Image (cartoon, rainbow, N blue to C red; front, side, top):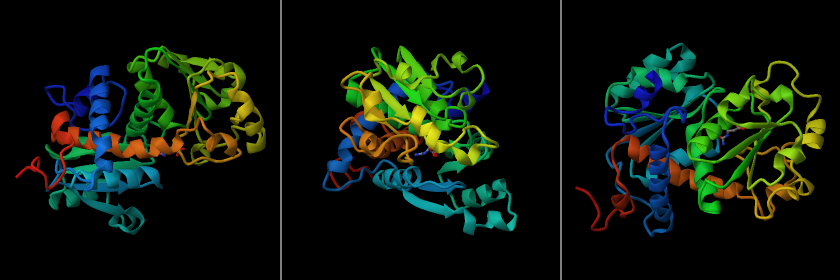
Length: 334
Ligand code: NCD
């Protein structure tokens, strides 16, 4: 598969991180295990490890982002990389420079990694095909296609809360049709061995033949949540909707907005997740977002460790034991 070989080198190691689709359970588990070793870095007196010292990471964000961009930046800094945040609206792309020209100029400055978010599906793949060898590309969300680090930080949060994947019912609720997060989550969770992944949405917000991805489809929220261990709500992606997919946000909340009463049919210890940004009163009630089952802020924290793992592995910079040594300790590399 072309896509697989683009992401992996000839030894099956990560070179770029563009999509979950095509990656195997072993590699996904290696990333999660590596992330586990990075969680402690935040608790150290010096919140840094030297794995990417001397490397330059460029955040190339052509679309709005808060959590993803800042956690990628923090992840790179905790790996001791130099980080450049390219402010796209103020950059030469608005003067007509092509994406490839921008890229080649950045490469001429000897940048080692590009973290790319773009409104077009396939943008990160396109860039990965054009960078020189040794430069890594990480997809931070491309159109409706994939958002692989989000899916892995979600999987990481689930594994920490539930201890594994092999016994779980996971319900993904909301705008599956326009969501790159949903696509990546479905690939990640089914690959990691979740036996039942459900999608819960009105027909207008589901892709055609979504069952082919290995999910169970529900249109009724209570039915979809019954017995669930994990409930993931997704934002209505209005910016990707052309035409009317919903009567109104009010009606959507009545039918699909998560409230305490719905969660009563899920497992008593179920957790509630959301990739953010949340629209309170649309995807979920505030009492759920801020309630005892919510792990939404843990997802954000875990984003740093998971992104550190992906970056370190893609640069060939880590193995697990070495990963946690502090800068300035005996573990420091010359
Ligand atoms: C998601 C995205 O941008 O795809 N957000 C995120 O990365 N935290 C989901 C969304 O925008 O709804």
